[in-house]
Image 1 (cartoon, rainbow, N blue to C red):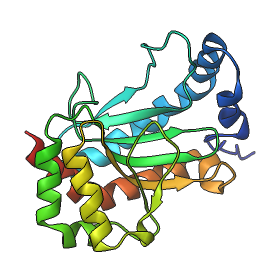
Image 2: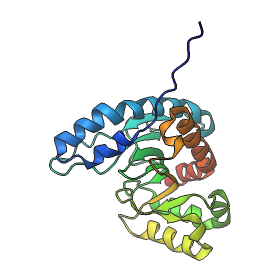
Image 3: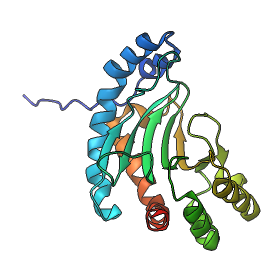
Image 4: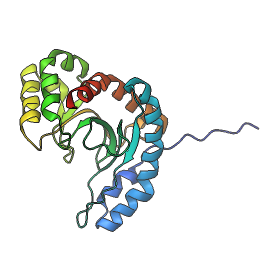
Length: 216
């Protein structure tokens, strides 16, 4: 008798529904019990997958939301970074969930100390940056908000403006990647999701490496 291998489950509607739970402790329990184990599994595989291309070991970090004392988090995520101790002050990759979509990002958030250098490096080779970001990708200027801009809507002048803002505004951020709807079949298939995320990260790897060189 042949034993059928069970396909690992990705994220379900129940996981996205966690972000509708009222109360900090209650929502955090849902994140810890339902979502975090999946982020751990997916992140471990992704770290191994992209480390060779990144040129250094990529360490997995899981959002802890430790600073929250009242308001429950609206999203949660994993981060992959070349620094073992932390990720926020470094260029990194993310995969995570809001209640209405899953995101896969190259993330340069406001804690990165070399934002000005990174923005300048990108602006100096703007044509290359634009060529590396497919029209199907999206861009966010704030990792705490759901809003994103379709790359297909960004002309060269728009890229210059948002990179200038990233350079000049202290709290400005730059996140480039892809969104998936909760009902997308890829979301529910763990291995398909890992392939999708790894493909995204590989596409954006030249920008990640440029950021790592520039921010030091």
